[in-house]
Structure formats: structure tokens, C-alpha cells
Length: 145
Image: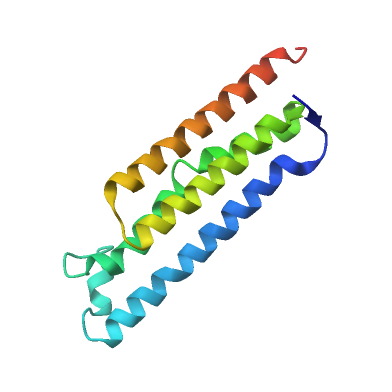
């Protein structure tokens, strides 16, 4: 397992942040398109999202929230790894794998939205992130106090 002293562990964070920003841009696009078609009114969003909002309009928002929940641990983990441990190539690979799986999860969610496929990718991505955190924790515990 090779060790890198460069910022390679930070690049997956940048990629996930860019993907999250892209998904966030889909929210006003879906809402505006639906409003122009007369399917919704802006007031349908006063309580967050009312029952009047069609599923295809609410899915980008739900996916965006998914990208702000558990993936927060990727950002924290990468920063902890960068400042507190020697970063291994396996750690970098796990971080990139998590990002790739979350992009696949989003793509499924935002397109054909088959729950079984989405859940499988979601679960795999979470397992990868847990593995990354275990590696980071083990590395931190090996550091002199």
C-alpha cells in the first residue's frame, strides 16, 4: 500500500462538491419547467414541497438532500486523513469509489429511478465510506500521541 503526501485525497471531495452543485441546478430547472406547464404554483413550495408537487419535480430536490447527508462524512474524512495521517493509495481509491457510486446513485435516481438498483448502489457507496473511515481511524490511532 503506497503512501502519498500530496492532496490526492482532497480531489474526490472537489468532484463530489461539483456533482452536488450540478444536481442542485436541476431543482430550479424542474420547478420552473413544471410551473411554466401550469402543473404547479410557486406557493406549492411554501411548506417545503406540498403534495401538489409531481414526483419528477421533487426527485432532484430529494437527490440533492441525499448528497448533503451521508456524503458529508466523505468531506470530513478526507480532511481528517489529509491533516492527521499518511494517506494511502487505498484511501484515495475508496474516496473516488464512493464518489463514483454516488454519481451512479444520482443518475439512477434522476432518470429511470428503479428503487432496487438505487438501493444497491446506495448501500455499496455507504459501505465504501465506512471502510474509508475505518482506515482513517486505524491510521490516526497509529500516530504517536
